[in-house]
Amino acid sequence: QVQLVESGGGLVQAGGSLRLSCAASGRIFSFNRMGWYRQAPGKQRELVARITSGGSTNYADSVKGRFDISRDNAKKTVYLQMNSLKPEDTANYYCNYDEGIWTKAYWGQGTQVTVSS
Image 1 (tube, rainbow, N blue to C red):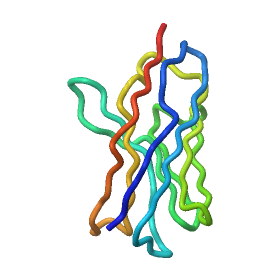
Image 2: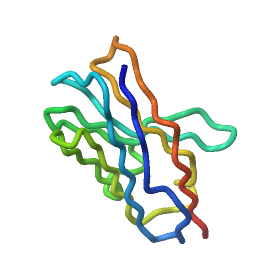
Image 3: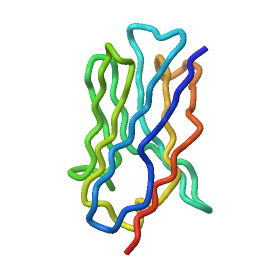
């Protein structure tokens, strides 16, 4: 089992920045992927950014150039630095962990990000 605890959400004005953190605990394999998804009211959950234990990253087109995902493997923590935030970034952000495309996914409880215009 893997447990994920998120922090760092909140309310920010458009153009501002926030940094999300997600700490993993439990059975963590040396190869894994950690990432952030988000879900706005009435919309499907979507991938925001993901990073492997080796440091490979991928981003949703809507956040490229504004968001940066990083991780500290020693701390088993992944970060999402969000800059130039827009009202359309408003959503509940969920941390995600898995060990590959066909493996079980684990989810955090979610942290709310609200961007005011």
